[in-house]
Image 1 (cartoon, one colour):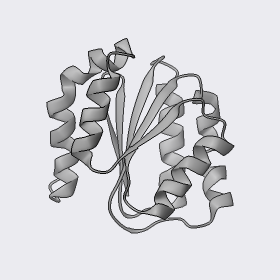
Image 2 (cartoon, helix red, strand yellow):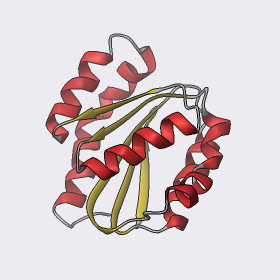
Image 3 (cartoon, rainbow, N blue to C red):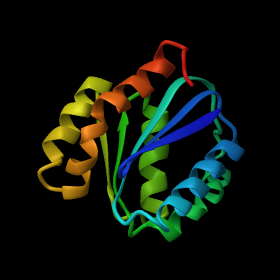
Length: 149
């Protein structure tokens, strides 16, 4: 499953349960569409409680192909280190698709918030969007507790 919510210039994309190639493609399409109206995107991509995910790297990259048209809008991609394979997929996708943003991974979700708050001084639109940090935390927590809306 894939869901996202936009908080200013921050997109929180949550993958949970059985993640399919269609979910990955929907993510790429959503980011491509958002990049048409938002110049500076900061993506928090989180695989939470994932039971199955695509393992064919070639098919996954094809599904993410829509992200290439968004490469100038995505300033940072944030995530947490869930497992080495998912970290590898995220970094490979970023490099192969030539996404110019940096992928930042934190050990925990709380560490991720700290990193974002520190980086906010470098990115004015990230700083402006962090007024939604409590809503972002609540949204992510709803997936961790199984009460997602």
